[in-house]
Amino acid sequence: MDNEQRIKQTNLSVSLGLSVNIILALVKSIVGILGSSPALLADGINSTSDVVYYLVVSVFVRAANKPADDEHPFGHTQYESVGALVVGAFVITTALTIFWNAIDTLLQVLQGKGDFNGGSQLALYVALGTVFIKIALFLITARIGKRTNNETVIALASDHRNDILAASAATLGIFMGRLGYLWMDPAAGGLVAFFILRTGISIVRESTAALMDTVPGKPLNDKVTALVGAVPGVQEVDSILAHRFGQYYIINLTISVSDQISVHDGDLIASRVEKTLLDSLPDLRSVHVHYHPRAQFRAEL
Image 1 (cartoon, rainbow, N blue to C red):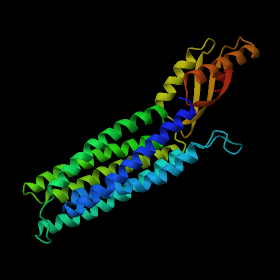
Image 2 (image 1 turned 45 degrees about the vertical axis):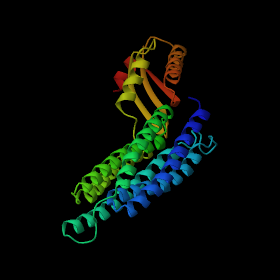
Image 3 (image 1 turned 60 degrees about the vertical axis):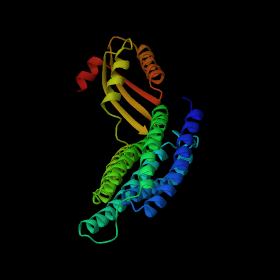
């Protein structure tokens, strides 16, 4: 996928999610209040927070799409990680707010205080409809995230998946509340908060790892080792050091070659290694290959 298509797909996922969440936030919040359902109201608050951070994310997505310049030779894709971090922070804040409200209502129900009598039938239908809408959004956004390898879009897909669980918990709580188990509606609101909090922590952890330049990990090292090891003239892969820049990364590689070849032949092997990696790894932006005669390198060790 070229960069222009990647930008279009990313913007599509953000615009679609924003539009749907605006509608869901209004419907669920209004019906949650009028229909006396803490679980649906909690889910409505969740959708309202979705709208806020979708607006924030759209700013970071536009910044990440800026072309490379002299000060940022690898582009501005790190903004994707910043956007994902913002999403995670909003998710965690929302979870804590919903949990506090749900627990407060639950305690009132258990103590026989307040006038809570269970959610309305309309609240049940809205919660159930939200489940199916969020399933569709998750499938679309996850597919775009996989195609673009955009951390922000992947974070949004995780949030949609979280919303499926939250809406399912709200649906169950409202249903059981209408059967007479009034405590289950606010309890479901607390369960919604738990799902939201777990997703928020996961998003923050992953985006922080990217911003802290955490190495891509063993899968990439294994793939690079296999590709480089298959290049004629390479006797051993001695070290691999990868640096991430948002979606992209660069690799510093040290290999061992025969001590019987000339410098010219060594340069040719290094060039073949570089070409092999750039052709095989679409998110790789640059490769720096260092080579040593194997016997000399072993002696230095």
